[in-house]
Length: 139
Image 1: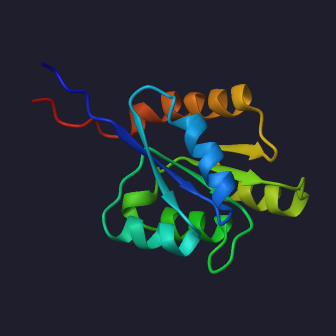
Image 2 (image 1 turned 90 degrees about the horizontal axis):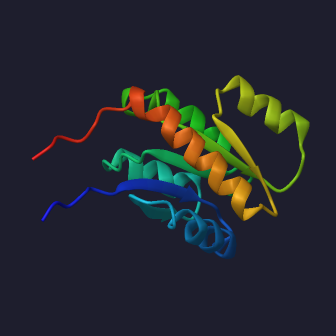
């Protein structure tokens, strides 16, 4: 029997209900496993400990370490230079979105999010990022 490895998707949001809702929606994407972090600092610690997600969905506004700060730290590291980021925002804050574009965000989700649009955004970014990410070894 062949077992296809599931790739982790990191969902970072200080709002537990938002994490649950987004994680539940993304868990329906075939071949993924949802890993959650309560804020950017917790996500950073998980990444430093060896977590290598296929994609990171992070809220922009969080205590301790916000989404832009997390993306900046991760992108400065060799392990995270090509990690796709989808930024989640509850407000159409132009300065934050412009900062995210300068930092090379791969996509955006605006709260409250639409399930079909959110899933399509994440699936599109996952497909686009596959060529630049190493494939897991075949057994």
